[in-house]
Length: 241
Image (tube, rainbow, N blue to C red; front, top):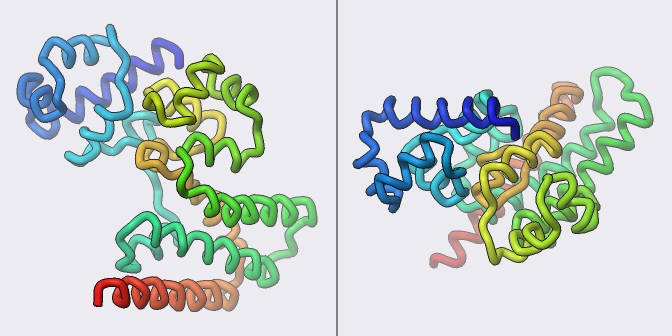
């Protein structure tokens, strides 16, 4: 991240603090930092770490906007999951896995003929969405690397970090930092808010496919996903009862 780019991130973070009406003293206490530490962060002398950004997110800071300068736009698939009443990320990931499968079926109901190479690309991306569900117990960096089928050395190069530091972060020994979040967004279009939350879901491809599908196909996909919601909620109720 260039200094000019990082300064823009800092400006948006400070803007957020002022919008919520917090002084440095108030915010430092709630973020479990000393005022001196917060001063150094806002002055750009120290870099923000993921844990501090997570604390800020709890108070309503739009992580995607702060890091990228762009507000996250929710598409049809994401909105469906958000409105489904499913709460945990484990349940949401189950719906995403189902959605990826349903969208592949939806490729048979497109408004216009999709070139074969584009269709093959979509199918490969959907395959990766489904496969990554098998790695829930691993760190987000491990799953992101597996999703893009890269070696640790290649992944470290893509994220502009040393291999030793990368391995430590992938194993969960050390936390990710703002530089890595920025590079993951630039290189892999990985949403900062999902990365900070321990998830790598990027809805761009899913929504792109959805927009190619006819109304009939979208109806079939929505019906399948609604059935998935009912199954997930049914399982949750069985556990609680």
